[in-house]
Amino acid sequence: MDMETNRAMEVVGIGVPYYDMVINVSKMPGLDGAAGANEAFYQGGGKVATAMAAAARLGRRAGIIAKVGENHRGRFVIEDFRYNGVDTSAVIVDAPGTSSPFCLSLSEEEHKTRIFIGKEGTAGELQPEEIDYSYLGKAKYLHLENGRPASEAAARFAKEHGIVTVMDADNYQEGIVKLLPLLDVFIASEFFYRDMFGELDYEAGCRRLMTAGPSTVIVTLGSRGSVGLTEQDGFFKTESFQVPVRDTTGAGDVFHGAYIVGLLEGMNAPECARFASAVSAIKCTCFGGRTGIPDRKTVAEFLETGVIDDTQAQERLAYYRNNL
Image 1 (cartoon, one colour):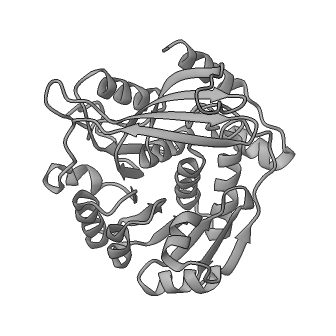
Image 2 (cartoon, rainbow, N blue to C red; image 1 turned 180 degrees about the vertical axis):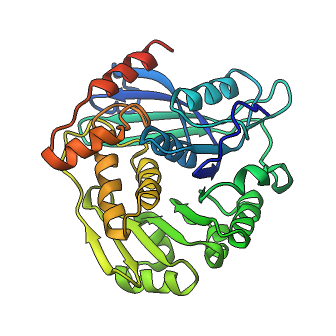
């Protein structure tokens, strides 16, 4: 464990970090076809992992509890967390020779789509007893992405210690559903929602989810924005921001990290959703899941004027290009 800091984190995430190869093409090739890459570089990935990168970029103290492989993939994952300002003092490096999972993130400009091709690593799964509970106990927010044993243990600990738990329900999992009584903020993708409720009206589905435990339910709808429900704010809809999209990889992950930042800043649910939508939109104007994540000043300027200052994003793009 790297004891690089003793600072208390405002938000701690538990998830599986990935070693991503980011490739962008103008048009996806057909079978037996070929395409030239507009961009190609390596970058850290993963749902909660990238959410923590977003929270850190936006100026909050964000840390990650995870297990990574010992080989070059795991070392790169840790290095990229640090580059993005995420505390890694609670990261566990597995036995020599183990690897972190790999993902090919292939995005296309023509249709604004992306394809993920993953390969699991050999690093073991984070276990409940491997969580640094003293580290987690100092946080205000816990962010999760699955219903695995470590996530359940962390959610129970958070419930007992007054830590607000936020769930990224991207893909439908029974384990996530079972955790609903322990969750405070439940942010589901439209894919999770459809798998669980089919064509049920969004407000009705959100109310069912709230009945199970969370006080806030949000459903993200991609380019169509998001919908949400709380007792205080009622049912609401947030429109998406219109920007020149280059790559939607990581858009949902960044939304989650920005939503938590909104909570830390005292925003209500509709305000958090609008803020998170803006941060996610800015991210989509640059290649990769983390390259275009803005700082707080850039978001404020965008919300006020509609202008995106991409100076820092271009600097990060140059940094990542160099790692190929």
